[in-house]
Picture 1 (cartoon, rainbow, N blue to C red):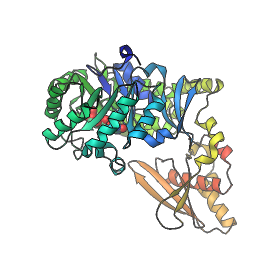
Picture 2: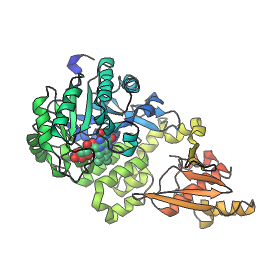
Picture 3: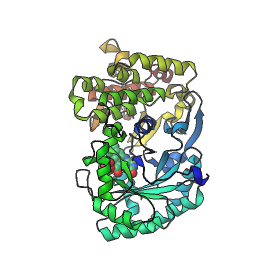
Picture 4: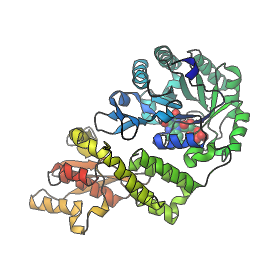
Length: 455
Ligand code: FNR
């Protein structure tokens, strides 16, 4: 890449990396509203490495498709190419470099996550674990800086002692990275704790590369608040996560747009780029926040398909037309891609150490509208099948996370589950029953695909 087109990180407004939130529709929306640089959600190195690059002519995107289940790990398009940064979750210089090489032609920069405090990251030696291993962190960055022609950055959290933070940042900057983003909280501090703006400022004054201030969303409600955050941190560049997640038009110099307008614009991108319904719903729910308890919020909670979500904002017709158009153009969407890779979608997962803990899993949604009578429901069908075949009574266990549910059904000593989280316990049980019916051969995979249950 020539230095003329190389991404610069000085004086920039940046959409922060956010798992599940930072997918293509949100990134494009942030660019529309005035962000200069958009980070994608953290992508774990080995996941990307098992993906295959595919140019999607219908959508005009480049897709990195998971070879194991056909899902899309990273979708990008030419419009964001000069501004999109791919954030890697990694603990390994070689893997990080392989990922960077894989995506080099499609992105403007590479970032390494050195701040995620989640158990999954830290136990794997990634994210905030790297803060305690400066040598490893340096090795990763050096491999990237020397091995790819793109600017490399990292995103860290501060350490408990200001002096330690400075030392770490000096060491990281010495690898030749283009900028460093600092979330002004320690690994153990939570979003409700105050952001340590003064520590970011001390680092910004000392380093010769741009320091990107992060962690200010609690005090940022509009564009003018961004200027105040810059002032407090002494940084010319600011990275926003939650403020943008709540209302992405926070990047707009003339003030925020009404939330409904932002949601409509978001949904249009979701349709245009065939964003998965589950991800779309999650993002809109995060925009609604307290408004989820309003009639409109409750309506959204009931939805499962993109068309249903769009209908809540009077975009149902638009969605139907656009989906039809894309289908006619030959969109290889999730449903059409699935048949070629049906088998890998079947996963056998170990829940525990003991024998018999294998769970047969399929990513399969329960869509209530498909069943006219209660007797058609998967649970009823399964019960009848079990009685006819002397298989005993199906037994369901359900777990809940946030507002989502997932069930496992035990039948004849074997367990079945859908890897699609449902909005209530009843639906989660129906989803598990459906997977069981499929595994028993009562329902065909083709029928599930045709009904749109395979997501
Ligand atoms: C995050 N954050 C985060 N950070 C990161 O480096 N990689 C990631 O994938 C994520 N994922 C993520 C998801 C969601 C939903 C949130 C809210 C946050 C942390 C984020 O980038 C940022 O550092 C903090 O949220 C602090 O910045 P704000 O929110 O005060 O602007």
